[in-house]
Image (cartoon, rainbow, N blue to C red):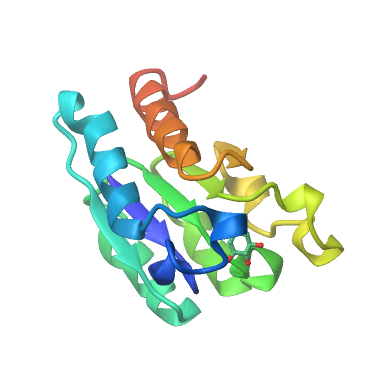
Length: 145
Ligand code: DQA
């Protein structure tokens, strides 16, 4: 499965820890891997600060992954190329935000990718990635639910 993180998420752990927590991206990768291990899934973790690189990763790994967890970071707001790339990503995917974006500034209240996601996990910190991984396992087993 694909674990895709957008801009500024490579510095998790030291980036505004009062908002995003102290878990690093490596911690999150390990947590997600632990959730899906029993299913025999491996985690391909990709983090880029640039939108074009994220688009490329989605196209590159679209056919070889069973699902994705996507935290678009601020690209949630106007990442139209990211949105278009995800539109062509066939497996189920879940959007995650560590912080409760609706409790924050108004510009974070809408996500251009959310309408395409199977579901969205918001505001539960790093644990949200574990929940998203469990959701993917569920979706892979019963794709229409
Ligand atoms: C974020 C929320 C976004 O609004 C912000 O730009 C981020 C992180 C989150 O995980 O809470 O970079 O996606």
